[in-house]
Amino acid sequence: MDTIRVAFDLFYDLIKPVVFKLTDKDPQTAHELFIKFCKLIHRFGLEELILDNKRNNSILPFELSNAAGFNKNGDIPPTVLNFLGFERVVVGTVTYDRWDGNPRPTIRRYPETESMVNWMGLPGVGAKEVAQRLASYGNHGVPITINIMSTPGKQGNELLRDLEGTILSTRNLNYVNRFELNVSCPNTHGKSGEMDARDENLRMLDYMLKVMDKCLHHYQEAYFKVSPDSTSADIDDTINVAKEHNIRGVVIGNTTTQHNKKYIPISPMINGKQVGGASGNAVYTNSLKVQKAYDKKIKDIGKDWKLIVCGGINSLERLSDRLMYGANGIQIYTPLVFSGPKLLRELRGYKK
Ligand SMILES: Cc1cc2nc3c(=O)[nH]c(=O)nc-3n(C[C@H](O)[C@H](O)[C@H](O)COP(=O)(O)O)c2cc1C
Image 1: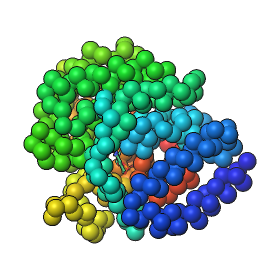
Image 2 (image 1 turned 90 degrees about the vertical axis):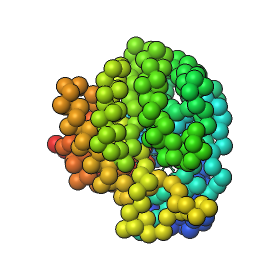
Image 3 (image 1 turned 30 degrees about the vertical axis):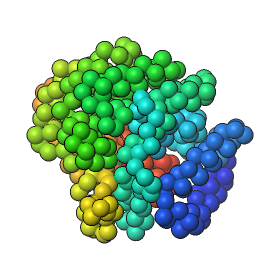
């Protein structure tokens, strides 16, 4: 059935410019259309026929999953993402309470440089609703990671109870065998009232990891997701804190607030201030730099933590670079938007 896949690639390339044009003012609308498409093909059991990117592939030497944000509320059926080419499905960021996030539009696309900037601010339907959606997919067999953070605005014990509530609401779901703590979102409202709460999150890391130690089932792995803007001090501090906990690995990294003009010629501004985190090509260099630093430091302290990496991985060359510097898993969001499903087939063709 390779003809169907080639036809689907062509279809993607044909409709992409039209959809980009129509959704230029609010690119989130394009993602909502994509989610509708996924639900539709799932309802008619067509995901294998239309999407089967895993065909003819043996087991990959790395784990391939979607990056967080792509399936925030678990709306995309896991089997659809699996047939699209992902071994594992990441859901979230999930917060305990329903949260509207920032007023739309909160995404800007830069097709010329295959980059995006978003300042969504963790909108979501809340942990209990996400759990119901995931439970409705029944015996789907696809490993699930829940990416978690507290509902924006919560502090101290309230923040920790929020995280605990999310874990308790989702940990008994079938196939949920990993949690990813997102301490690197640059778009949330911290105590300071600023958009960027990353420093505040890092100060709470020890307490948040304690909640994960306490609440995860023994078969569930704990990861924390760090920023591609991490400084050497951030890297040292997070490793020193995390080594006292039941950590399985680190996810590197989120979006960057360092908007390189080469990729983001005009940054989104709100009230005269630059907003948002950049992804895709705009984050590749930072993300790889931070990956190399974590890889080295983790080896130095003799931990066998896994590294899961994302940020502009849009070619076999970039995939090889990431694997060379210790990556065990790859996550994709922005490059999939610009390249379409054929990218996942290309990455799945990786040979050592
Ligand atoms: C629109 C959008 C929404 C995102 N939402 C989240 C999120 O909710 N939680 C999170 O941890 N990362 C989120 N991210 C960051 C991605 O998971 C990923 O770390 C980053 O985009 C770099 O990978 P990429 O270049 O493959 O997109 C989001 C990214 C984008 C583009």
